[in-house]
Image 1 (cartoon, rainbow, N blue to C red):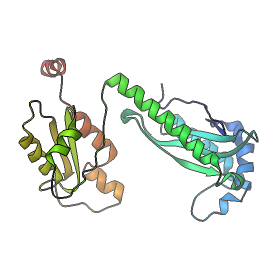
Image 2: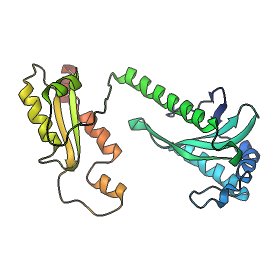
Image 3: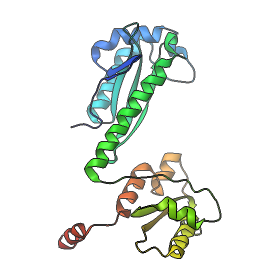
Length: 244
Protein backbone atom coordinates (compact mmCIF):
# COMPACT_ATOMS: atom_id res chain seq x y z
CA UNK A 1 0.00 0.00 0.00
CA UNK A 2 1.31 3.45 -0.93
CA UNK A 3 2.14 6.01 1.73
CA UNK A 4 0.47 8.38 2.22
CA UNK A 5 -2.60 6.57 0.91
CA UNK A 6 -4.82 8.48 -1.56
CA UNK A 7 -7.60 10.15 0.40
CA UNK A 8 -10.31 12.77 -0.04
CA UNK A 9 -10.13 15.46 2.65
CA UNK A 10 -13.33 17.41 3.31
CA UNK A 11 -13.55 20.64 5.29
CA UNK A 12 -16.12 23.36 5.77
CA UNK A 13 -14.68 25.50 2.96
CA UNK A 14 -12.77 23.17 0.66
CA UNK A 15 -12.53 19.57 -0.46
CA UNK A 16 -9.12 18.21 -1.43
CA UNK A 17 -9.42 15.15 -3.65
CA UNK A 18 -6.90 13.04 -5.58
CA UNK A 19 -6.08 14.32 -9.06
CA UNK A 20 -7.64 12.53 -12.04
CA UNK A 21 -7.27 12.98 -15.79
CA UNK A 22 -10.87 14.24 -16.06
CA UNK A 23 -9.99 17.25 -13.89
CA UNK A 24 -8.38 18.75 -17.00
CA UNK A 25 -11.08 21.24 -17.96
CA UNK A 26 -11.50 22.50 -14.41
CA UNK A 27 -7.76 23.11 -14.08
CA UNK A 28 -7.69 24.93 -17.41
CA UNK A 29 -10.29 27.31 -15.99
CA UNK A 30 -8.10 27.75 -12.92
CA UNK A 31 -4.98 28.83 -14.82
CA UNK A 32 -7.03 31.18 -17.00
CA UNK A 33 -8.35 32.91 -13.88
CA UNK A 34 -5.54 35.45 -13.51
CA UNK A 35 -3.41 34.09 -16.38
CA UNK A 36 -1.31 32.23 -13.86
CA UNK A 37 1.21 31.01 -16.44
CA UNK A 38 2.48 34.59 -16.77
CA UNK A 39 3.59 34.84 -13.13
CA UNK A 40 7.36 35.31 -13.18
CA UNK A 41 8.09 33.90 -9.70
CA UNK A 42 6.61 30.43 -10.18
CA UNK A 43 6.03 27.80 -12.86
CA UNK A 44 2.38 27.12 -13.76
CA UNK A 45 1.29 25.57 -17.05
CA UNK A 46 -0.53 27.56 -19.71
CA UNK A 47 -3.95 26.21 -20.76
CA UNK A 48 -2.43 24.09 -23.52
CA UNK A 49 0.07 22.60 -21.06
CA UNK A 50 -2.37 21.52 -18.34
CA UNK A 51 -2.85 18.01 -19.72
CA UNK A 52 0.91 17.42 -19.77
CA UNK A 53 1.17 18.71 -16.20
CA UNK A 54 -1.58 16.32 -15.08
CA UNK A 55 0.26 13.44 -16.77
CA UNK A 56 3.51 14.51 -15.10
CA UNK A 57 1.92 14.56 -11.66
CA UNK A 58 0.17 11.24 -12.15
CA UNK A 59 3.43 9.78 -13.42
CA UNK A 60 5.22 10.88 -10.25
CA UNK A 61 2.37 9.35 -8.25
CA UNK A 62 2.90 6.04 -10.05
CA UNK A 63 6.58 6.19 -9.04
CA UNK A 64 5.63 6.84 -5.42
CA UNK A 65 7.16 10.32 -5.13
CA UNK A 66 3.99 12.43 -5.30
CA UNK A 67 0.33 12.32 -4.30
CA UNK A 68 -1.38 15.08 -6.33
CA UNK A 69 -4.72 16.71 -5.52
CA UNK A 70 -7.18 19.24 -6.83
CA UNK A 71 -8.73 21.80 -4.50
CA UNK A 72 -12.49 22.34 -4.74
CA UNK A 73 -14.34 25.37 -3.39
CA UNK A 74 -17.35 23.83 -1.64
CA UNK A 75 -19.51 26.97 -1.98
CA UNK A 76 -19.00 27.24 -5.75
CA UNK A 77 -18.57 23.49 -6.32
CA UNK A 78 -15.69 24.12 -8.69
CA UNK A 79 -11.97 23.43 -8.84
CA UNK A 80 -9.95 26.43 -7.71
CA UNK A 81 -6.43 25.00 -7.49
CA UNK A 82 -3.98 22.13 -7.34
CA UNK A 83 -1.58 20.91 -4.68
CA UNK A 84 0.29 17.76 -3.66
CA UNK A 85 2.25 15.75 -1.19
CA UNK A 86 5.61 15.83 -2.95
CA UNK A 87 9.16 14.48 -2.55
CA UNK A 88 7.63 11.54 -0.71
CA UNK A 89 10.07 9.35 1.22
CA UNK A 90 7.85 6.45 2.24
CA UNK A 91 10.62 4.52 4.00
CA UNK A 92 11.25 7.42 6.37
CA UNK A 93 7.63 8.65 6.44
CA UNK A 94 8.56 12.10 5.10
CA UNK A 95 6.54 14.35 2.80
CA UNK A 96 6.42 17.97 1.70
CA UNK A 97 3.33 19.97 0.74
CA UNK A 98 3.92 21.90 -2.46
CA UNK A 99 3.45 22.32 -6.21
CA UNK A 100 0.42 24.41 -5.25
CA UNK A 101 -1.36 27.03 -7.30
CA UNK A 102 -4.73 28.77 -7.07
CA UNK A 103 -7.05 30.69 -9.34
CA UNK A 104 -6.67 34.43 -8.79
CA UNK A 105 -10.22 34.60 -7.41
CA UNK A 106 -9.32 32.04 -4.72
CA UNK A 107 -6.09 33.70 -3.60
CA UNK A 108 -5.97 35.57 -0.26
CA UNK A 109 -9.04 33.72 0.98
CA UNK A 110 -9.53 31.09 3.67
CA UNK A 111 -9.30 28.37 1.02
CA UNK A 112 -5.53 27.89 1.20
CA UNK A 113 -5.53 28.00 5.01
CA UNK A 114 -8.07 25.20 5.33
CA UNK A 115 -6.49 23.20 2.53
CA UNK A 116 -3.11 23.18 4.27
CA UNK A 117 -4.73 22.41 7.64
CA UNK A 118 -6.47 19.37 6.16
CA UNK A 119 -3.29 18.12 4.51
CA UNK A 120 -1.13 18.69 7.58
CA UNK A 121 -3.65 16.96 9.82
CA UNK A 122 -3.68 13.97 7.48
CA UNK A 123 0.12 13.81 7.41
CA UNK A 124 0.34 13.99 11.20
CA UNK A 125 -2.26 11.23 11.48
CA UNK A 126 -0.09 9.07 9.23
CA UNK A 127 2.87 9.81 11.52
CA UNK A 128 0.76 8.91 14.56
CA UNK A 129 -0.09 5.56 13.04
CA UNK A 130 3.63 4.98 12.43
CA UNK A 131 4.28 5.76 16.09
CA UNK A 132 1.71 3.19 17.12
CA UNK A 133 3.27 0.60 14.82
CA UNK A 134 6.88 1.17 15.87
CA UNK A 135 6.51 2.53 19.39
CA UNK A 136 9.04 5.28 18.62
CA UNK A 137 8.39 8.97 19.24
CA UNK A 138 10.74 11.83 18.38
CA UNK A 139 11.02 15.28 19.93
CA UNK A 140 12.98 18.20 18.46
CA UNK A 141 14.58 20.46 21.07
CA UNK A 142 16.41 23.68 20.16
CA UNK A 143 19.28 24.40 22.53
CA UNK A 144 18.57 27.74 24.25
CA UNK A 145 22.27 28.57 24.70
CA UNK A 146 25.33 28.57 22.45
CA UNK A 147 28.10 28.00 24.98
CA UNK A 148 26.64 26.40 28.09
CA UNK A 149 24.21 23.73 29.28
CA UNK A 150 21.91 24.19 32.25
CA UNK A 151 21.82 20.86 34.11
CA UNK A 152 18.30 21.25 35.48
CA UNK A 153 16.99 22.24 32.04
CA UNK A 154 18.71 19.25 30.43
CA UNK A 155 17.34 16.82 33.01
CA UNK A 156 13.79 18.12 32.50
CA UNK A 157 14.13 18.15 28.71
CA UNK A 158 15.36 14.55 28.61
CA UNK A 159 12.45 13.14 30.57
CA UNK A 160 12.35 9.44 29.78
CA UNK A 161 14.23 9.64 26.48
CA UNK A 162 16.21 6.51 25.65
CA UNK A 163 18.43 8.21 23.08
CA UNK A 164 19.71 11.70 22.30
CA UNK A 165 20.98 12.78 18.88
CA UNK A 166 22.75 16.14 18.66
CA UNK A 167 23.02 17.92 15.31
CA UNK A 168 25.71 20.56 14.88
CA UNK A 169 25.65 22.64 11.71
CA UNK A 170 29.46 22.78 11.80
CA UNK A 171 32.30 20.56 13.02
CA UNK A 172 31.09 17.92 15.43
CA UNK A 173 34.34 18.13 17.44
CA UNK A 174 34.15 20.94 19.95
CA UNK A 175 30.47 21.48 19.17
CA UNK A 176 27.35 21.55 21.28
CA UNK A 177 27.08 17.77 21.14
CA UNK A 178 30.25 17.53 23.21
CA UNK A 179 28.82 19.99 25.76
CA UNK A 180 25.66 17.91 26.06
CA UNK A 181 27.72 14.74 26.46
CA UNK A 182 29.71 16.29 29.29
CA UNK A 183 26.53 17.57 30.94
CA UNK A 184 24.96 14.10 30.72
CA UNK A 185 27.99 12.61 32.45
CA UNK A 186 27.78 15.20 35.22
CA UNK A 187 24.09 14.46 35.79
CA UNK A 188 25.05 10.92 36.83
CA UNK A 189 21.70 9.47 35.74
CA UNK A 190 21.03 5.86 36.69
CA UNK A 191 19.87 5.17 33.14
CA UNK A 192 21.62 7.76 31.01
CA UNK A 193 20.30 7.98 27.43
CA UNK A 194 22.53 6.91 24.59
CA UNK A 195 24.20 9.92 22.91
CA UNK A 196 24.91 10.14 19.18
CA UNK A 197 26.64 13.25 17.81
CA UNK A 198 26.05 14.28 14.20
CA UNK A 199 27.81 17.08 12.33
CA UNK A 200 30.60 17.91 9.88
CA UNK A 201 33.63 15.68 10.41
CA UNK A 202 35.94 16.88 7.62
CA UNK A 203 36.62 19.88 5.40
CA UNK A 204 33.29 20.97 3.87
CA UNK A 205 32.66 19.83 0.32
CA UNK A 206 31.69 22.28 -2.44
CA UNK A 207 28.40 21.98 -4.30
CA UNK A 208 24.72 22.77 -4.04
CA UNK A 209 23.00 22.64 -0.65
CA UNK A 210 21.55 19.20 -1.36
CA UNK A 211 24.89 17.86 -2.64
CA UNK A 212 26.84 19.13 0.37
CA UNK A 213 24.31 17.82 2.88
CA UNK A 214 24.26 14.40 1.21
CA UNK A 215 28.09 14.26 1.07
CA UNK A 216 28.39 14.94 4.80
CA UNK A 217 25.41 12.66 5.56
CA UNK A 218 23.38 15.54 6.92
CA UNK A 219 20.50 15.15 4.47
CA UNK A 220 17.09 13.95 5.67
CA UNK A 221 17.60 10.31 4.68
CA UNK A 222 20.98 10.12 6.43
CA UNK A 223 19.64 11.83 9.54
CA UNK A 224 16.76 9.38 9.79
CA UNK A 225 19.25 6.53 9.54
CA UNK A 226 21.27 8.14 12.33
CA UNK A 227 18.15 8.44 14.48
CA UNK A 228 17.30 4.78 13.95
CA UNK A 229 20.85 3.72 14.67
CA UNK A 230 20.83 5.74 17.90
CA UNK A 231 17.97 3.76 19.40
CA UNK A 232 19.13 1.27 22.05
CA UNK A 233 18.40 -2.29 21.04
CA UNK A 234 16.14 -4.40 23.18
CA UNK A 235 17.45 -7.70 24.55
CA UNK A 236 15.51 -9.56 21.85
CA UNK A 237 16.99 -7.35 19.11
CA UNK A 238 20.53 -7.79 20.50
CA UNK A 239 20.09 -11.57 20.50
CA UNK A 240 18.75 -11.53 16.94
CA UNK A 241 21.74 -9.42 15.85
CA UNK A 242 24.17 -11.81 17.50
CA UNK A 243 22.54 -14.80 15.80
CA UNK A 244 22.74 -13.34 12.29
